[in-house]
Amino acid sequence: MSDILRIEKLTRNFGGLAAVSNVDLRLGEGELVGLIGPNGAGKTTVFNLLTGVYPPSSGTIAFTRDAQELSLGGRKPNVVCRAGVGRTFQNIRLFKDLTVLENVEIALQQNHRYSLAASFFRLPPFARTEAAVREESMELLALMGLAEKAEEQARNLPYGDQRHLEIARALATRPTLLLLDEPAAGMNPAETAELTGLISRLRTEFGLTILLIEHDMSLVMKICERIYVLDHGVVIASGTPAEVRANPRVIEAYLGEEA
Image (cartoon, rainbow, N blue to C red; front, side, top):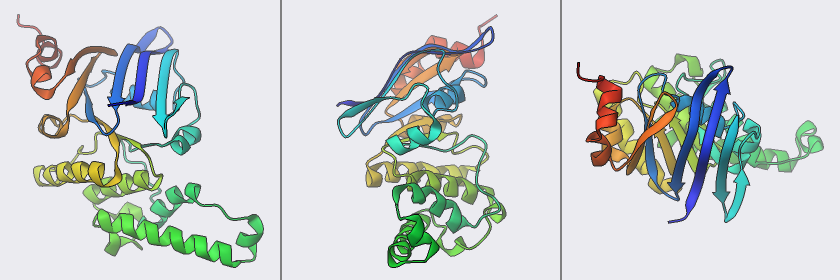
């Protein structure tokens, strides 16, 4: 299995604080990998380094698509997105004053081109492109069970639907690597069970490689093939769900040392 993502010695300092320190991580093409750890362990910082929100203080991030390797370290978010890395956020970041459909259409626009003249004069290339964007957007919304809510404002969706819309918008960027930051946060057990099935299905249907941050251990242990564990910005363990579950350092990080 060839690697689609390879992170080596990744470090990010904020003043005198090392939020992430010498992190090594790899994802093989088509894998579904978990990134877990206690609150404040540095998980979302890793995602922000991968997607250009922060530049690394040191270390390398190598991403491979179509047999071409690209260094993502220090790249701007729009460049990372166009390269094929999509993400969701721990705190939902929808365009809440736009409709559900418009949220997805915006993400799809980067994959379509027409001239300024075609747009200004509403020429046939513009009309064809807009129709294609709308059709693809509606297909993604249907996949997420949101087609009937396409014309509603995003802010009016129930919480679980907002999570689904954020995933639809990430898929609209046509990624090969999808980063999911606590997608089950705030969901009840029934919604989490539905999400678990959805993530597995999307991985297969879209040919995705997925890196997942999640605090719901039942979800992580059920669908992830491998898991990395962060604590205080350092990888303290990695392996299969069974190996990680039994690792004394992981147990200590979550439960503390025995007195």
